[in-house]
Length: 124
Image (cartoon, rainbow, N blue to C red; front, side):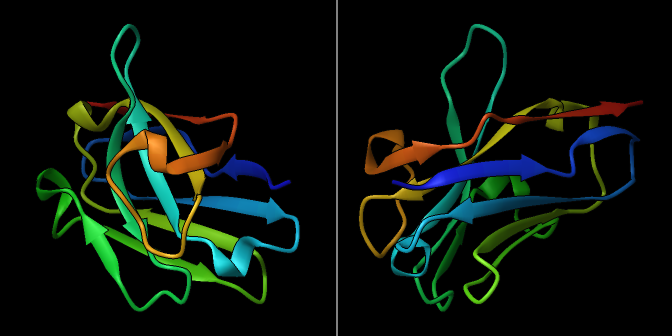
């Protein structure tokens, strides 16, 4: 069992930055890939970024490359998503997810634990 709790969302002006955190409980965090997804009302959850169990492999969606960094600290059981130069179109609920395996995936089906989500709102 893995419990995930996101934090760090909020209201920010366009051009600003946020650092989302995902704190995990459970002993398997360090052996799992982790991911970040976003979801708009009425739409499917889509991948933003993911990171392997060791942190040496990362993947970022093309739409956010250059503005986002994904990282993890296995000693602290925490995953991070740094988002810079925020745009109004970044507004969504952001979810962290714990993968079923050691390497990440863009598919939600590859993750079996999810956080409750944190709202990110970017004003123009």
